[in-house]
Image (cartoon, rainbow, N blue to C red):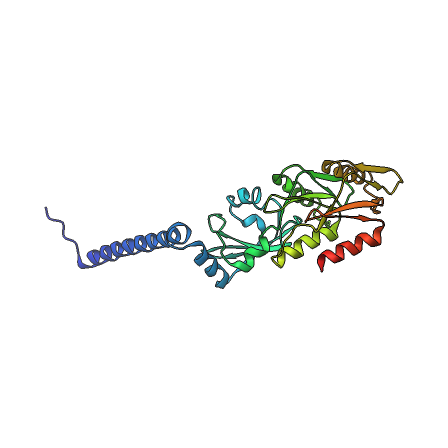
Length: 290
């Protein structure tokens, strides 16, 4: 027996078939576009430009893909998320802050794809802000706003500072880096920075693309008088940490150690000079800058 399909039923089936095909095409196209954006078609620089120029909405940091956690526990372990902006279908623009003073600037920007991959940003200005002028030689010590101490033994330990602020969300005061600290320059040279002024001198030289090496160093041993009148003698570079340990044990004391004179300084050309007081030491530093 033949089945007769009326024109109305036939027309309805044709519409349903066409609709199914159309939905399939749209779904395939959407998937293809997503795959192209995420993995296949767009280079990181192009995707970053699209994110920058697109309309964005501010979202909570918790909205970032899970894959970004690996980056924030590795290369960006020293960074806090200040702001996250989402360009729908493209990716994320993330504003960062860091207490790692080896970086050129405290604030910077990074980009992630929708899947959470950190994009390779070739923009020189943004990249320069994230660059490091030097590497800290661990351990590095900080006094936190509650007078507790955090010691970083490796670069991965920067997350300890971030975790402290996550546990104390109302605290805005930043941690205090304890001096002296050792740093390693690009050429492998190890330098000891006695205070913040010496650190800023290194960073200024970095920003101006000049020689970052200190003009001179102390001939050891040297002795420091601490705020409680005790003395610490530095016989070798590692002994500078004894000064930091004193401040860890006395976190409420803001007065710094004072250098006992006279001391001998050694210039980069191996020549030496005897420094008899603080004024002469300051003059020697000024002469270096000039």
